[in-house]
Image (cartoon, rainbow over all chains, first blue to last red; front, side, top):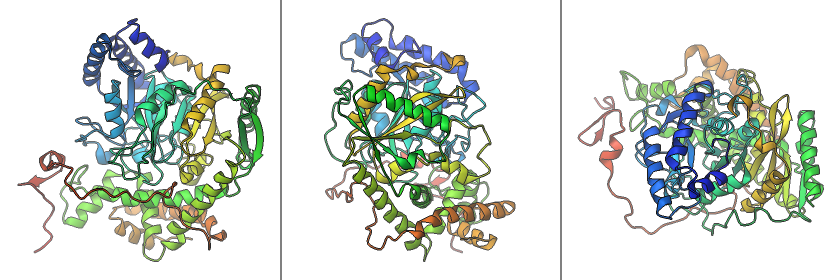
Length: 484
Length: 95
């Protein structure tokens, strides 16, 4: 059962080939057996999952099943879950039992999905390798000596290892797409404002966006259908109708225009990855697509602008963790300042501290214009580059990451080297566009992902483009041999 | 842009973030590196560019000025490290 996709499991449930209880038990058994090697889960919610499965079976028996009814999924531990610890991968929230559900969680519950548990992640989603988690790093199931990517590393690894058929992720600078690429799965970062951020612990509010991670584009479509839509509780949620993401999955790509930005194929890209992207593009030509060269001239400014905007917003957002109202509090504070300083100093890990310090510096008196405002202007230039490109092409394609999964410790000593593993994904967040990563082959037995970037609110088209490729190829069906 | 230990301590104070004394130099080195990296932005002329706060240039939505949330003080304070009689407790501030 564990090798089936969400679409197949949904069909099996409705055909009564197995019950949701059996299915849920099967995944819980796999988690128990395999997760000690991978460390994907911070919390396994076995009891709640079995109760949800029983309720789903009753819905199915009553003929009231939707496409996700009874299907097990797992939530990144950044989404608040009422009555269940929501740690955000941090010592700061190790004791935090969320008092309410994130909108994303509530919508999956409403759709009848079963939650298996909460997934490990880089602390407060700040990291590209899952090495910053308070709960220890997640391992990549393709090679447990390599990182799964980050920050949604638990999500990517659990889906690739068949511990869950689908998982949620969040993406601020590549945190869905890069781990999807490293673990050989399919991940979608939606347009900014499409998926509610309510109850999704904030890192950089103008960039953060939740999205689905699964093995196929078809499954991502199913999950996105449940997640997307206006939420009055998120002040940046965009109010517009949600299309049926499954409807156009098989649409023809005849005459479809793909843009390849020259900036994505520079000397920093691993040649084996470049070759695999070429082969994937060749497959798209066979499907009827036209390929054009485009340019995103301000691409090289995206990482510098991001490492101002993201830390600045992080330092503001994380000011709420003060040791007073919730979360970690230091022992025996001698005065109020000591309480703030030590609760935060002891509660946050090294990378979070680094980003709070950078953010505090760039927002401090006299520096705002030179850093934050400047970065917001660069954001406009990057966004204009994409606008220009989308006048000529329908989607942009390129690598998701310049390398395959790297080894633990390889980049931890040099923050900038770590930041550059998101070099191709960051611009998409700055512009607020939707982007996907799909598996397109292997380099040194490690998965390689291709990124597909679309114009605002064209998730349906991205999923269609990914789905057609997955119908013609079988990279997305490969399983890591120890977890097949 | 290069930051020294004194500046790191000042920023850490602004952020109300205790950092270990033996790590200050490492933070100074890392932060200087990151600031040097973002320095690339200053080479670009952005004189006529409008800053972008929201990808769709959407303004913050306003809502009716009406009560929508119920009082959940007890629920929320159940998560606080130290409360008494509905109040959050902190070390004494005023002598």
